[in-house]
View: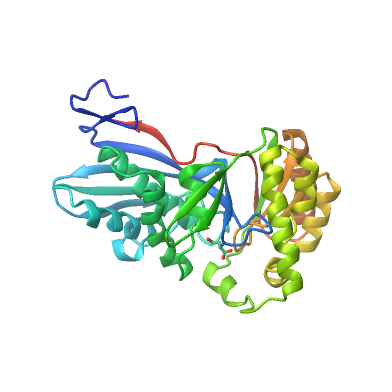
Length: 328
Ligand code: HSE
């Protein structure tokens, strides 16, 4: 990858080229909340995501020069990738600038981390071109600034999962602390994305300000046992833990046929299902690809009858996060 470059630096035992001028990256879709982990847990998908090209320019500024796929703003201050890029740029102040091309495959408002993929992708790519001055936690901090534009608040569950890969637990946003949680080898996700848009800010606005102690106890028992199940490869415990008694009752009303989808996924053998992020996507987790495919077929049947357009993805858990497609 680096053979045409002349200047290198060693950081964290990695040889880094400082003469790299252009990079293309894949920035993955992510599932936030994962049933009982509202705002703190997320996982990363393997085969769904945006691509971005970032290159150095002589002008000391950041510009978005191309957007394909879905419509998002070109103005740097109004684009999540631009806002996170600026947050990083203002800290490092290099004597050059960057231009960013965004190839969006993840529809905004889909609930699988569209804004997070953009926010994480720009800072990941710039960091590579800068010779990796920042670690993944620092990159997540910049990406949160972009995410905040879409969410109206600073949450890191999608951006942390996109940058670190695997399952991530955001222990705290201020100061930022991200824990990487192991992913059982045979765990697969099936994601259905009904083609309706739900804005995260609106899906947050309908949530209650206070919750019952009884519900909180159920939720943190489920959350603790979910984390334990991921550490111990315990699929049965995972099945028993994937329940959300706090957020789902409110948000499920925004997703047409949600209860039927969930019922059919579980009947087809899914370990559990829930709303992906703030919806409308719905995720199911399965042990093994065969089961994930059976869940896909079952939920496809439900949605085929509704007249609502949809996409379905089956994905293993992406343990790597954002990755380089090429650089030179
Ligand atoms: N946890 C967020 C929410 C998802 O459900 O509102 C976006 O980060």
